[in-house]
Amino acid sequence: MTASAHSSSRIARGGKAIYGAPLGILMLEARFPRIPGDMGNGTTWPFPVLYRVVSGASPEKVVLKGAAGLLPDFIDAAKDLVRLGAEAITTNCGFLSLFQKEIAAAVGVPVATSSLMQVPWVQATLPPGKRVGLVTVSGSTLTPAHLEGAGVPLDTPMVGTENGKEFFRVLIKAEKDDMDIAQAERDVVEAGKELVAKNPDVGAIVLECTNMPPYAAALQAEVGLPVYDIYSMITWFHTGLRPRVFA
Image 1 (cartoon, rainbow, N blue to C red):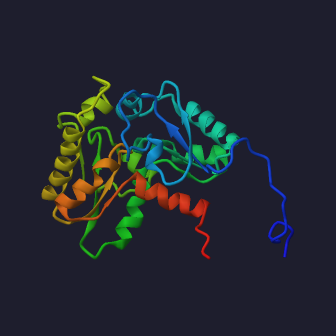
Image 2 (cartoon, rainbow, N blue to C red; image 1 turned 135 degrees about the vertical axis):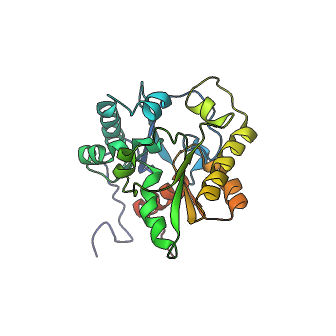
């Protein structure tokens, strides 16, 4: 038995600045409300996390403009989180799948940039003839490059929330700081219903946007299909960092 495993050992290991929060989250710079369930609300997580806001990385720049020019800023912020004590990195925008390979190569710890990375795993659970569908904040700007970055088949059906009344307008266009939560929920649910109506072979839904978990239960109840999001992915991701200790 090693000294660190011995029951009488009282040696604590150092080398980091912050302890007990192995997951680092790279945040976009935004002002909209982050309600419980939103990735940017600390009460969403059943474990502590580290946050780092990437200055200048607005939702509009990342979602509508391909995050052009922002890769060095995301890498620097990810490295800062690792220096603080993060043992893995994620981000609060599914569109950052564009940077998956580059951030992972730069920081030397596990990286999961996007909820979209779940698609191959969810697909493997479905019966023959069924496939995964996507609900995204912006279907018009979720490109093949975003899908390829997350290992998502390019023919995956998707519907965005651009035609809704609240969700897209508040999150991406930043037209106001407050948000009608009930209307935002309706926008996400309606997008999911449209996805299923247009694609009857959809057997499960993955929500791209990290602001959508508050509405996942309502969508699942409406369409009767499994719904996965950034919460489902990151709770799984974190379980590998801190496996449960069974008595």
